Length: 114
Figure 1 (cartoon, rainbow, N blue to C red):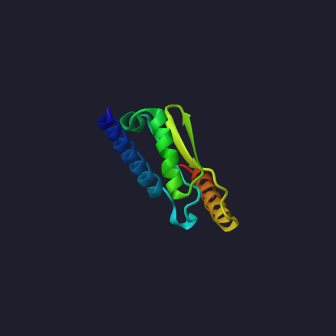
Figure 2 (figure 1 turned 90 degrees about the vertical axis):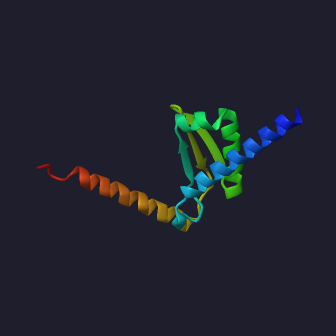
Figure 3 (figure 1 turned 45 degrees about the vertical axis):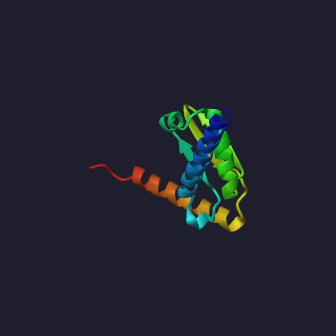
């Protein structure tokens, strides 16, 4: 039995490492580690194993990154979010970026079609 437990532990550690790498990859450097989010589709989830294990591993991976990680399953997708409050300057920067993206989208929607 201990061999099986060791194998399961190693598999779980690999899952944590994989999720941590994915979570780190989606971080925007200008936000200094805040506003992290990762969304896994149903295919990714099926490949990674049991949902409860993926959620637990995501919380551990988030802890390694300093996140206050929450997970939400919506329509077969698993959302992993950093729920920490960001410092004011980071919050302002993210707000400005969101406003610019909305403005750009609205401008594209109002262009005359030819």
